[in-house]
Each structure stands twice: as C-alpha cells, then as structure tokens.
Length: 57
Image (cartoon, rainbow, N blue to C red):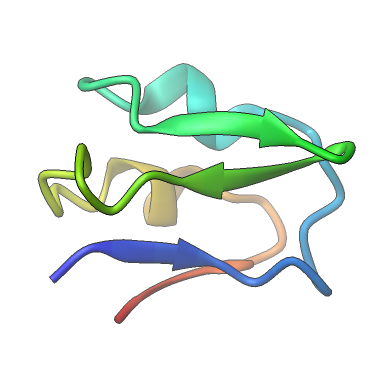
C-alpha cells in the first residue's frame, strides 16, 4: 500500500521528498503529496518526517 501525507499536518519542509528513492513526492500548494502510482511503499518518507504527517494507507 502507498503512503499518504496528511495535508493538515504537513508543514512543507520537504524532508520526505529528499529521502524518496523513486521521486514519488512532489510539492503542491506549499505542502507535499505522494503520487501513489509511483510510490513503492518503502517507508523512507514516514521515518524521515519530523512531525509524523505520513502514514501508510
């Protein structure tokens, strides 16, 4: 299952995007979103997020 970023919690720091090995995370409206078609569910983003805004769906 792909991961998802909670937009109401995301502060737009970009830490997750820098750690995504498949570049599935992109900026949108000063926050970040995960493209579920590209995400390989590795979990690198979840462990990197400093405010725990990412979870597996």
